Amino acid sequence: MLSLLFVILSGIALPIGGIQMQYLWRNQLGDVYSLGLGSAACLGAAAATMSGWCSLTVGSFICTLICTIVCFFVTLRVNTQNLITFGILFGTFIGSLGTIVVTNAPNGDLLKQYYLWGAANFNLEGVTTGDILFSLSLFAVGLAAALWAAKRLTAHFKGEIELTNLHKALLLIAIMFLVTSSVSICGPIGFISLGVPNLSRILCRSTDIRKHYLISSAMGVGLLLATYLVVKYVSFGIYLPISATMAIIALPLMAILFIKSGSEN
Image (cartoon, rainbow, N blue to C red):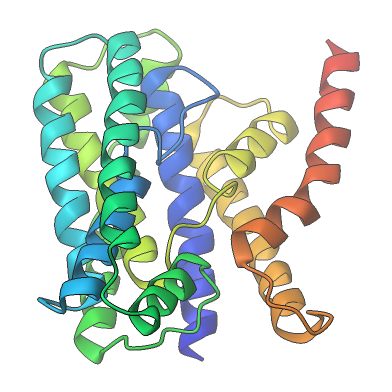
C-alpha cells in the first residue's frame, strides 16, 4: 500500500513541479532537475548511504535544500536565461561530487543499496515512519504553494506580469519541496517531470496552469502506475528500473503526439 501511495504522490508532485518550472521560465524545456535538484538528491543519498550519518531520505533532503538555497540567491541576481545556464553547470558540478562519493563506496552492499534507491522502483527499503511523515508534509506544503501561486504563474507565463526575482526564488523552494517529497523516498524519476507537462500542453491549449495541474497529475499517476505494474509483474525475469522502463513505454506516445501537433501547426 505504501508503494502505491508513493506512486500516486510522485505522479502528482513531479509533473506539477515540472509545469511550474516551464511557466516560471516560459520555456517548454523547464524541468525540476534542471537546476541540479536531481543531482543534489543523489549526492545527499550517496553521502548518507556511504557514511551512515543519517537516513538516506534525510541526506537527500538536506543536500537538495542546500542546492536550492544556492539557486535562491543566484535567482535574486540573474535573469532567467542565465539561471538556466547556471543550473546546468551547477548540476554537472553536483553530479561530479556524487560520482566521487559513489566510486569510493566502502563496500559493495552500500553501493547496491544506493543504486537500488536510484532505480526508483518504490521498494521503500530502509524507509522509516518518520521519513514517510516528513515526505508527506513536504508534499502538502509544496502542493499548497503551487495552488496559491497558480494565478500569478499563469499571468507571468502569458506575459501579463513579470514576477520579481524574490518571488521566483520563493517558488523554487516550494517546487523543491514537491520534488523532494518524492525523490528523497523513491529516488530520481526521469521523464515524468518534463515529458508529462509537455504532453499536457499539447493536449490542452489552455494557458491556465490549474488545468495543467489536473491533466499532468492524471497523466503522471496513470503512466507511473502502468510502469510500476509492468516492472512488478511483467519484468521478463530481469530487473527493470522505473525511469528507464517509463521512458520506453512513453516514447511512442510522445512521438505520435508531437508529430500530430506539428502537422496541425
